[in-house]
Amino acid sequence: MRILVQTTCLANGELSALIAADAVAAQPGAIESEAAARLVAAGPLASSVELDLSGVSEWDSASISWVFRVQRAIQAAGRSCRIGGLPNDAAGLLELAGSVPERKGARRSEVSVPLLEGIGQQAVQLWSDLLEWCDFVGELLVSLSRALRGKARIPVRDIWVTMEECGPSALPIVTLISVLVGVILGFIGAQQLRQFGAEIYVANLVGIAMCREMGGIMAGIIMAGRTGAAFAAQLGTMQVNEEIDALKTFGFSPMEYLVVPRVMALIVMMPLLAVYADVLGMLGGALISSFALDISLLRYFEQLTSAVFLKDVALGVAKSCVFGILIAVSGCLYGMRCGRSASAVGIAVTSAVVAGIVAIVVSDAVFAVMCEVLKI
Image (cartoon, helix red, strand yellow):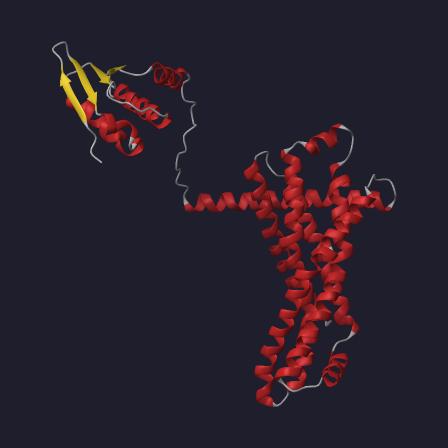
C-alpha cells in the first residue's frame, strides 16, 4: 500500500503534512516506516513538522499507536512534531502513551551467543539442574524416613486418592498399549523364527521381553506422560496460586504434605501396573501365535512357563519401582519449581514429562549393564 502524505514547506521553516484519511487506519504497522521517512525527507531544512490529521474519520488503538511511532521517529531525527486535527479522545490516548517513558530493556533484543559460550551455559545449567535434583531427592528421603517412623504429618487420604488416579484410572491406556506391544513383538518374532521352523520360540521372545523390559518401560512411559504431567500441573498451579506459600505459612511442610503422598502412591502402583502390562503383553503374543502361527494356546503357555522364570518377573518389578520414583520426583520437582505465570505451568509439565522419560531410559540402561555384570 502507498502512504498518502502531502507535505508543504512553509516560509518559517516548518513542514506541514496532510495525512490521507485511509493512511492511518488501514495498515499502521506496514506504513509506519515509509510515512516517517517521507515526512522527514520532504523538508530537510525544516526545524519542525506539523501533522494535520483532520481528514481521518475513524480512530482506534492501532491508529493512535501509528501516530505515536511516527511522532517518535520525527523527534528522533532532531525535529519537533506538532499534531493537529485529533479528536479529544484520541488526543488523550496519545498524551497518555507518551506520559511514561519506555522502560530500559523492555524491548526484546536478539543476542547472538557464540557456540562455545552456549555450550558452557548449557553445561552450567545441566550441573545446576543435577544439584537441584540431588537436593530434592535428599529432602524427599528425609521426609520419607520421617513418614516411616510416624513423625511426619502425611495426609493418608491423599495417598489413597492418588493411588486411585495412578492405578485403576490408568488401566484402559495400559491395557491398550500392553496388548499392542505384545502383538508387535509376536509379529516380529514370527517373521524371523519362521525361517528356521522355530515358531514356538515366539513365546520365549514375548514372555522374556515383556517381563524384563517392555512391561515396566511401557507402563513407566505411560505414567510419565499421564501421571507425571498431572503431578507437575497440580503442583505448578498451586505454586501460581501461592497455595504452597500458604502451606509454609501455616507450618505445613510441602514436601511431606504434597510430594511424599504422590511418591508413595506411585511406588505402590507401578509394580502392579508393570505385572498387569506383562500379563496383557503375553496374552497379545498368544493371540498372534494362535492366529498367525497355528500354535495352540496350551502349547504357547507351556513354552511360556518353561522360558520365563521368577527372576525375570522380579527384575521387571524392581525396575518399575525405580521408574515410579523417578516419575514422581520429576513431576513433583518441576511442579514445585514452577514460575508464577500461566505459561510457566505448561513449561513445567513439558519439562516433567521429558525428564521422566529420559530418566526411565537412562535407569533402564544402568539396569541392563548391572544385569550383564551380575549375570542375571
